[in-house]
Image (cartoon, rainbow, N blue to C red; front, top):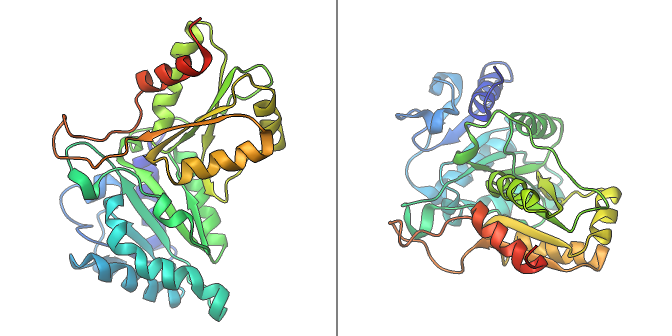
Length: 303
């Protein structure tokens, strides 16, 4: 049986600690659950460093370790906590190589989830980091993608912001892009929306629509091939960009870049422009397959 994303992350971190002699920093790492089962059952003597609940300080400690070239992995259990953790990462780690010629490679595991956890902790917040120089941003949802970005991090001297999502931890399958010159509309899917995008694509194709999909791993730098650009140019209605973040960030930025390249319309769908609450009636959830289908039918018209 193929390994899940959860098992893959756990295996990579065990190797990082025991073979690479690296470190992992974060809060409640060794508590019940071991961060959604993504950490091996190791302790401080093995390099698993428990930080206090002072969120603002944690980023600075991880950055200090990175300056010593220990290539730390810094675990932020809820992406919304980046509002507290980001300052030292963005204002020191991301600028150190450029300004002082001293690389500060840190691997930031930022974990998204939503549903009943309120206005601060939930959802994905990769747009917080997106506009700043000196950082690479990825959003792996499959075992193969995670292995790829970890290997690349270990071969470079850069700051990596890894936008994870707990909803993907049970996944063991790889995604495939489906883009050619015969599509009416192409979905550009980011983070956990990739799973719902696949459902929507299948449902719409049963209704006679020709829908393409591009799964986005690299947000910064955003990677798109000449073949994919050509397919978008030849599509009927351009692209629908999906995100588990507010659209006034990564989604709109990618849309602008693609519009300049292709001269095609770019539509976006992400979190509603409101704060989440702690109940089902006040949640702010990422687009579901029915939301995506409705939006695409609205763009293309009923068949």
